[in-house]
Each structure stands twice: as C-alpha cells, then as structure tokens.
Length: 143
Image (cartoon, rainbow, N blue to C red; front, top):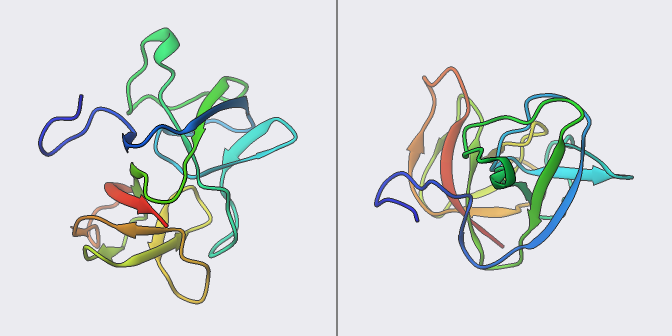
C-alpha cells in the first residue's frame, strides 16, 4: 500500500496488463517508461516519440522493491497502462514540473515537459528537480 507521500508501488490506480521481457541493458528501474522490441526490454529511447504506456514494475517474485534496478539479462516485469491510470514514474534531472503539466518521453525512460513531441502523461503533483543531479519520482496520469 502506498503511504501518504511516498508510494511503495508503481501502479497507484488501475490494473495494468502484465508483461515481461529480457532486459537489454542494466539499470531499468521500476516506474521507468519502457519499450519491448522482440522480447528485449529497454528504457524508451525516442525523445518526444510515440510510446506504448508500458512501465517497469518491481520484481516482486524475488522480493525486490521499487528502488531495485534490473540487471542486464534479467527478466523485466512491466505493465501496460491505459488512459486514466496513475503511475509512480520518473522525471529527468533538470526538470521543474507543475501539477497539470503534460509530459513527453525524455528518451531515457523518464519524462520531460512537452517540447515538440507527443504528450504521454499528465503530472499529478509539482516536483522541482532542477538541482537534483538524478531523476526524481513523480505521480503521473496516463492520457
């Protein structure tokens, strides 16, 4: 169950379609936007590009939590979300997002403010990560 401020789960509202594939690289974290090409799962790589709303989930089968990254070659569990679902995802370092902002893929499994790309999610909270030095977690709604 999520706590009031810091959820311990990725899918906050709604039930995604569960899928899996082999990690094509190390470092995929639960909550990252991912893509599956021929059974190989990687962080979504096209800045502002079209994406299936697929998010890595923790490997609960072995007891991993939301902060445990997948290693290269691991079986990555992920869920395909639908419009209206709420997800605990990531925004990129340097982003200052306000609740209600629309976000696009940053090309690294994280979200950034829409520039010229395709909005995939809407921010559900305000997060200032301009001085973060690393990605920050953020609650988003799939649009």
